[in-house]
Amino acid sequence: MKRIWFTYLVSIFLVNGIAQDSTSAFSFSLKEALDYAVKNSYQSQTAALDIEVSEQTVKSVTAIGYPQINATGSFQNYIDLPIFVVPSDAFGFPDWFNEWINSVSQSTQTYPNIPAGNGSEFQELQFGSKYNSSGSITVNQLIFDGSYFIGLKAAKIFVEVTQHSLTKTETEVKMLVTQSYYTALVSEENINILSENNKTLEKTLAETKAMYEAGFVEEMDVEQLKLMLANVENSFKTAQQQSEISRSLLKFQMGLDIAQKIELKDDISSLLGATEVALVTQDFKIENHIDFKLVATNETLMELNTKAEKMKYIPRLSGFFNHQQNSYRNEFDFFSGGKWYPTTLWGINLSVPLFGGFGRQANLQKAKLELEKAQIQKEMVEQNLKLQEQVSRAEYNTAMDVYKNQKENLALADKIRNKTAIKFREGVASSMELTQAENQYLTTQGNYIQSVFQLLNAKTKLDKALNNI
Image (cartoon, rainbow, N blue to C red; front, side):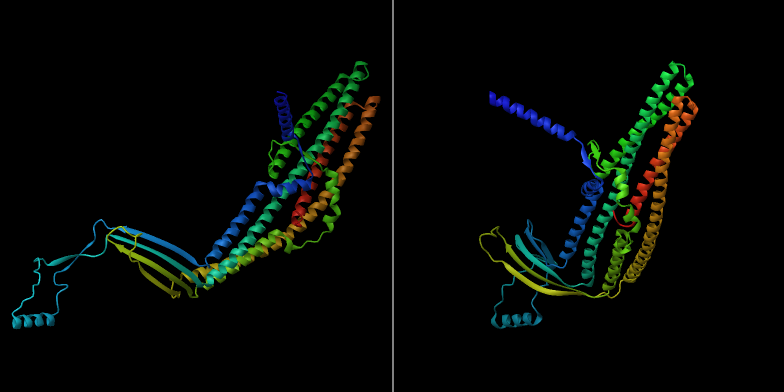
């Protein structure tokens, strides 16, 4: 009985432990969030499967050059043997033989007993046996096909394309996760600022109420502060909703269950200051950019496609070997003996393209045009990447200047608000001046939050342009 109670208590503790673990929050730095997303996001998982598909495609193409071995077997049971109808004299003796028979008959007075015909114009004949069985094995081997060797190279390049596509997908996932992570941090920063505003206004409102009850201020002053406090509370609730939405979006893009709680380790100041100098001074190497690698690989594929079309003008050579065993029975005794009749042969097939209705020529011209398009696209992407790098660097520098300016403005607006609040409590400033200072601070705070968001987005775009993500 004690043992049963002990097992029961242990089970309860284990269940509670598991339940607590499933509801506990995951904590991620930006780097940890990116690493998690690369492995678990839906896009990354799909792109990884595409690589496996391309690898199997290479194996499939390679297998064409290996011996192709096939075995077949058949069994036939003739319920009615086929009947062939031939003319009655189809198997008659030649004239010289008939003349010789007649001569011998007259000289010997002996006449051969030749069966009389049935008077019909045709004779019915049956050939074959009731049971037939056969088995064969065939080997085909490609000896030379120019298109095959080019296709094999193209299949391997295709694997490289899917690998680049995976890298491209991971880059896009990292960019989305980074932006969502930044958005969540900005939302938290906004919540913190609004929370401080709310506490300050509540304190000021309480002091103003006391002053009103003592007769030092008017009722309108209290009402003005109540209105400001209500606006700040509404902004605070909106910021909380935005924070929840940004976290849910972050979890979705990471491939994490959106019902799972998540905490962010990094803060805005550390993320902004860590790479500021490095981003401004980093060199741009276009050959390392994933978008350039993709179009360069596509150009290589189009070159191989053109070569493959040219190879279709070259003869194709293959060999084959076949061995077959046949048996014929009137009784079903294939496994108790009897003779099997073998047939064995080998040979070579040579296919020489002579004329295809100008189809091969059209396909070759089409491949050349596709190659030309790939070359133009490569040039366009190269110039576009250079443009993106210049624009992203300029936008980042501008966003950094705006951020620094708004940060100073926020500190200045906070200083003005505090001084105005002191003057209001001392009776030197009016409630209208206090309201103006508070509104000015809230507006500046909104501009500051917006500048932070724009700077983080500009940083993300520059990171992508420089292939840092």
